[in-house]
Length: 106
Image (cartoon, rainbow, N blue to C red; front, side, top):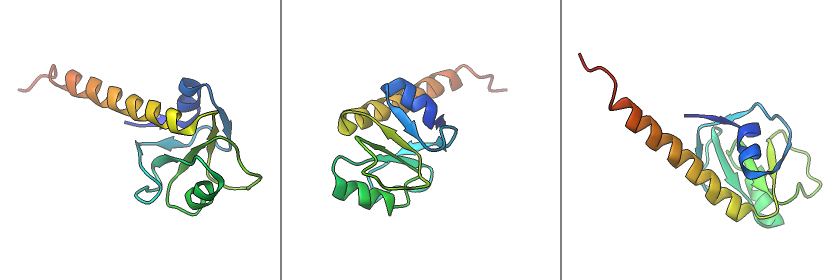
């Protein structure tokens, strides 16, 4: 289950800076993130940490003038937006689990 940065930004009402077609397959805190995860940063100090992390993309309130190859989703409240993204992945996983129970098991 993956989402493009553009799909996530549209759900959040955020603005994409960078590659809007980049895909993420999960969410994580800054320290546990891999290249396929999206994370969030509330303050400049955490933004710098997120930039230097393994995370593939970042939800933030501004770009702080930093140039990065990581796609950013800029929103007014990154913490709230991250919670919405958690729900987005949870809903998709739940849907896929329900759908798979209807598959033919021959």
